Image (cartoon, rainbow, N blue to C red):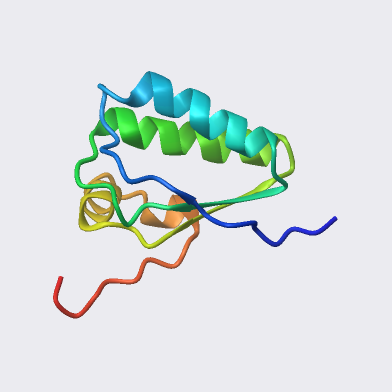
Length: 101
């Protein structure tokens, strides 16, 4: 099984309660179609707990299905929520903080 990700799935919309239902369907479909799903979250300008719950759901589903989920290019909004909720380590992805952050 090739566990290298295909082109990362770019999320360039807010991850809030207003987008949660549509994003849930999109993310679960992307996970179903891949052995290794990489999410590029650089374009996420706003994230709330609904967006965080989506990431937790996706991580749990990936583990249950024996798949790999990685998150890359965390936007400042994503970094803030993960840090505030003390969940950076729970996802296990390198969190690169730019010098100008």
